Length: 347
Ligand SMILES: NC(=O)c1ccc[n+]([C@@H]2O[C@H](COP(=O)([O-])OP(=O)(O)OC[C@H]3O[C@@H](n4cnc5c(N)ncnc54)[C@H](O)[C@@H]3O)[C@@H](O)[C@H]2O)c1
Ligand SMILES: [Zn+2]
Image (cartoon, rainbow, N blue to C red; front, top):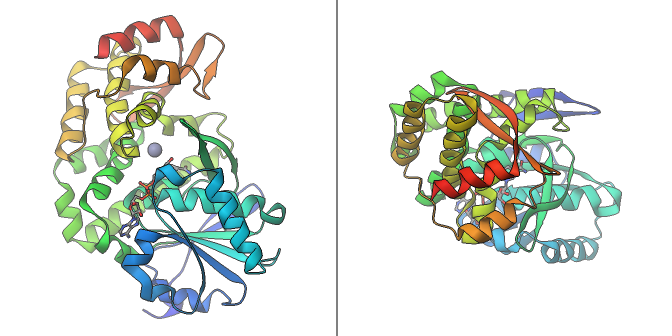
């Protein structure tokens, strides 16, 4: 591929344009970025699997995994940026899964009151979700993404060849967000997914490329219309209220926890939004087809305690994403008492 074959799709946010480069070869970044001014941030697993790609670039390697998405990792990165003499003209590129892109975006937003940054997502989950939309943050103890900013990267660079080294469980993890997109916005995508399995996408660069493009478009279209999450963007939290609480108590991977959260949200939708029980069965089956867990595993008392601290709580009610039908979601405020009752009936 020649560099001029890479033409970005452009998305306008308030005050910043985000360029999205699909089918872009990592090596072509050298034509876009200065070696002197660019600092890459990746994690130890991505580095181990793709060392060659980083030769000749300034690089910070962080520990892998959600456990390290915290203030300590931020401090370590900042110390290394200082050691590398990074200044306000520096450009930071996060190469990795959602943990790397979340931390990178956060550090870039606060280092010297903000430097420019970009992402090269390397997991399915980061490609279709975490790297998109400008939410960058870290966890504080059990509270997920409690501290963070909304700030858009300059560009997103999609090189699907990274996925060749992605472990199967991480593929599965990413499909939770893809199924979420189908549930809230795209009934034909839901049906299409029903006719496939994870393996179909693992073996076909064309199919996974198409699927990623379609999901990037779903998320970007929403976040461009509602960057600050005052309305439509909230729909992307489908399955996440209970999902996040489960993620914190069980240490399940994000997508796996969200999968259980989506089943719970379907049941809640049955109780308060007229969602068909047969549709809950379809969602549950699809999640299982993509090898995701659908039953509640976490400690329910602890999970409920964490739910009470959810960012979407307003006094005695929680704003909750429900499905009316597959492909159509809405926000409904649920009194905590009622939610607790439904929640208890889920186990
Ligand atoms: N900012 C947002 O809008 C947003 C949205 C969704 C999720 N997230 C966040 O994203 C995170 C989850 O992202 P994730 O699932 O990508 O997790 P992750 O970054 O932990 O990556 C999963 C695992 O895969 C490894 N890995 C990554 N790319 C690889 C590759 N190409 N080959 C081999 N191994 C590879 C990583 O080292 C890690 O062990 C969570 O912290 C979640 O809160 C953020
Ligand atoms: Zn998610």
